[in-house]
Figure 1 (cartoon, rainbow, N blue to C red):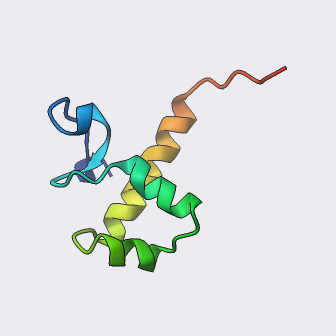
Figure 2 (cartoon, rainbow, N blue to C red; figure 1 turned 135 degrees about the horizontal axis):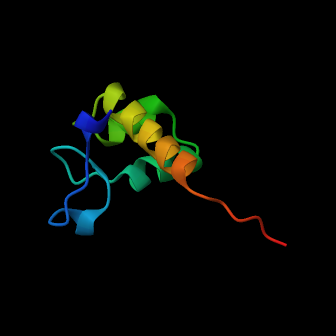
Length: 73
């Protein structure tokens, strides 16, 4: 997974992207949240592979897992 995700301050202001592209992890997450299927995401971004999309989801999962979440009152 880390080999597919890049965090570079010179690319997209350091936001996590699929390596070799300017496609941000958050874009992929937003597409899923908006109801896109894996197949539709790949149609929109033909330069991606299904492994790239899965890597983005795993990256986001890992980031959330590392965060300390403070419950709202």
